[in-house]
Length: 230
Image (cartoon, rainbow, N blue to C red; front, side):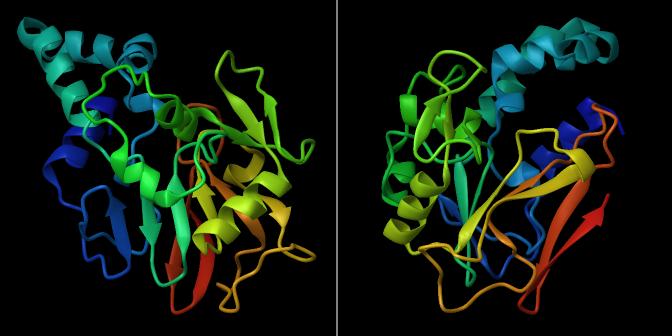
């Protein structure tokens, strides 16, 4: 399935059977599989999906209306929530991670929507920030201006403030398709109810085939987490 068909599926199919996910800012239902399409990521940004081939594919398949469709698709992408809360396990689903400018999840619901090129600092960092074992708090990222690496101390403070068990995110092509950051053992912050198999404070799951990595999905059910190839 190519990019256009995947995007069309994302648009026309509602998120299925969700008993444990609340999307921000609008509540909705979703499944217990961490589906990357549930939240906005930087591939949904207009400049990014233009540079990485989505517009070219539209031009080949829908030449008379390619630009019109490109704009409409990006208008839909801009309405996706920046984050989702998975209950009852208190897991935050997000594309990038912890921003320097956000302490409470309540701030997510107040972020501006329909912003084709996000100018809000918090929204931008939710999409672009990455975890790093080499920093404690925050450090500028090599990705560019306004992007940061976040460390264990920043994550623990954010999780404790919002009573979260951890974060599931994507954004990085990690070896093996998935990777835990900040081992839970010895952490200053731990919820009494732990999800079996969730071995760190942050889990990166990568689901793209474009980097020569077998895409993975995080599947949660009956109190445990498993990683499966897709």
